[in-house]
Every structure is written in C-alpha cells, then in structure tokens.
Image (cartoon, rainbow, N blue to C red; front, side):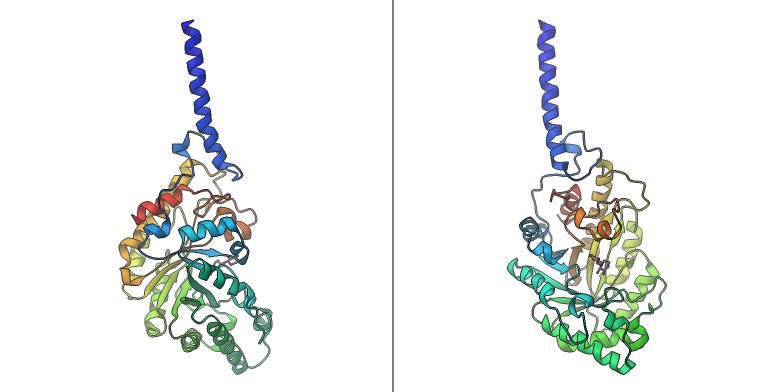
Length: 366
Ligand code: XIL
C-alpha cells in the first residue's frame, strides 16, 4: 500500500514536471529549436516584465519592411518595444528610382506612415551605397558631369520628399575598404574621390535639420577602418553629424576590449553614435546545429555586453540609439540571404517569442 501511494505520488510529480516541460516546448513550437528541455528556467525564451523603449534612456530601433507594416503581430511588438524604425529596403536607391527621373515613393511612404501612426522616429537608410543601385546608374553612359547632375538630383529629390518625416539619414553607406582606403564604386569613379563630401552637401542643402550619418560595417571590430571613418567625420566636420556602426557581429567578435577601444575613439569625435544594424549571429563557423540554452545564454550575454558598452561609453548627448536589424530570427537578412543560414541573430523567436537576449538587453539598460 505504502509502495502504491509512493508510486502514485511520484507519477504525479513526473506528470507535473512534464507539464512544465510542455509549456517550455510549446513556447518553442515552430522555431526549429534543438534541446530546449530542462524546465522553464533553462528556456531560450522568457516572459518579459519591462520593455526595451521603456527601460532605455536613448532610442531603440528596429529595421522593418513594408509587409511587416501590415502585420498586426509585428505592429503590436514594434509599438510596444521600439521607438525608432529604419526601412530594410524601402528607402534604397533601387526602390526609389527604377528609371532616371522616375520615383517610386509608395514603399518608403508606407514606412513613414507606420512610424507616424506608432509615434516612432524614422531613420532614413540609405542615400548612396554601391549595392541595391538601379541599372540606370550602374550602366550610366553620359558624361561625368551628367552623372553628377543626375545623382545630385536624386539625392535632392529624395531628401526633399522625406523632409520633416525622417529625423536622419545614412547619407553614405559602406564607402570604405577594410584598410583605410576608399572603396572604388560607380560613385567614386564618376563623382571623384571627394564624392562623400558632395553627397553630404546635397543632403544638407535639401534638409538642413536632418541629422546626417556616415554608416559602415566592421567599424566595431576593425580599428583601422574605424579610424578611417573617424577621420572622414573629422574632415567633414560640419557635414557629418554622426557615425553609424552597423554592428553585424557574432557571439565571439568583437571582444569587449576591442569594442571599448573603438568606442573611446568614436566618442572622442563628439559626433552622434548609432549602432545602426545590430544582430548577433550564434553560428559564425557553422558548428552550431541547434539553438540550445547554452547558445542562447552566450548570445544574451553578448547583447548585454554591447548595450552595456554603449550605455557606459557614449555620453547622453551623443546617443542616437541602437537599432536591431529585424525583429524575429526568421526575418533576419542573414537567414534570407544566406540560403537557410542556420542562425538565430535577433531578439525575438519566429513566433514573436521573447528570447532571453531581450532580457540581456533589459539587464544592461537598467
Ligand atoms: C539588407 C536587407 O536587410 C536585405 O533585405 C536586403 O536583401 C539586402 O540588404 N548593410 C546594410 C543594409 O547597410 O542595407 C543591408 O540590408 C544589410 C547590410
């Protein structure tokens, strides 16, 4: 009898444990997760008690698409957690101007409306970049003077269109090589090596109140490249208001030591500083086959470290904010562009679950 009672009690205990596990597993449903067992304390997700924007003392942004602007789920979390948005593609050259002198404003305007409706800041991305450029630009057959007139007209039209609607622009994106040299692009070739200054001048003239940024990748990890961006900002001191560090990083790089060193140098410019496209990949060398708790925890700690360094290093007057490059893992450009790239770089799971990375950000912001 005593044995039977014990058996019943232990069965009930196992059942109740299974219930807990069920909850954990249910949270993970549809997210192709690996080992997510071990009770809710070891889940890759958690139940938040604070919001990002409610905790931060600087703007917290998210990159988004026109499609997402029409999603009720996306809108609910975006408006709750974020107070700044950047269009992933809708304000790029190839979207804006399929033919010379022809403008397609609808995608960008959808993001403008989203930002306005949800009371969010809109960061313009991006005026001049060597990617996502329409063929009329890459195949331009006129003279260099005609090219300059066409690009000046494009920049002026776009900045004027969004005047009063965007707070800021990534005026030039990714113009530097990994050493401190200028990347050779259609723009450097046809507008000359001082083209960055020209583009900033055109943008400034069209909207004198927008904050103008130079934006690039690997600035957070390559000290030489970061110093080149800093030199550019200093050389164009009245035109460049801020530096955007894209921050497409991984759980292993950059180290806190490198990021701290670079941040000291960037802060010394006195410019605004935007972590403009943050994501943290967990699978930099393809060795991770599932998003287990240990991996999620390492990612949480990296997010926490990055937000902590920004908060500690950047004086309040220079904090333009931190923008994550997408909401859910499934939305990540790395996932889409990388052909089933097995990674989980963002703060939310595929079904809008709050990842513990979100908790890491909250802990850093508090
Ligand atoms: C990416 C978009 O997120 C993708 O949807 C698109 O296919 C390619 O561009 N650096 C940038 C961003 O400055 O504009 C890029 O965005 C990601 C890398």
